[in-house]
Length: 220
Figure (cartoon, helix red, strand yellow):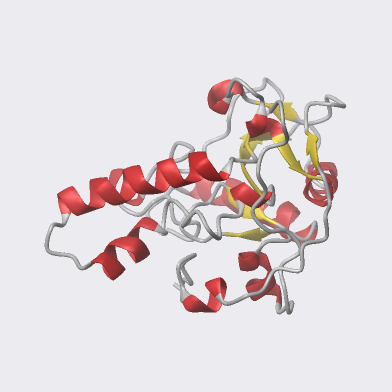
């Protein structure tokens, strides 16, 4: 398996942000993308992404074989919620590994939840998604969406060799269309793809990220 660069890595955190000011838009506006309600929040923040990310998702969907579609699960995550998720997971890891120093806890936590100050979801740059078939049912991608490293014994890693051939084919297909559309994967989570954030900039050799953390608009 190739080297996995975690979100907490200094190579990621040192990437500057040249905020382009692109707005967050609701992916439900045109009804082209299927949106799953499992991450629904009262303000509908979960269904928002930067315009450039939405455009690329539509491109990716157009590249899928007939009958298959993307299933959007979560996009924008307000910084306060990201911080809550990160702190909850670090607390879990501390309970499991009380001997680990703080730096190791932070790195391990970033396999599954990004540190809030650099989180792609809080920039509206990242999306969690999967594939569905003609009947609208999710395809087998080896683990449930959002299965953590501990729960899945590492099968959540995109290139995990512990999944079946069908799940591997589905992951490869998802990866092929999203990569062709310009998104990058976070390799510890097969479902997490992004464009314009610090991780994307590092992986594509860009000098700066296009999108930085964004606070929710008033009233949302």
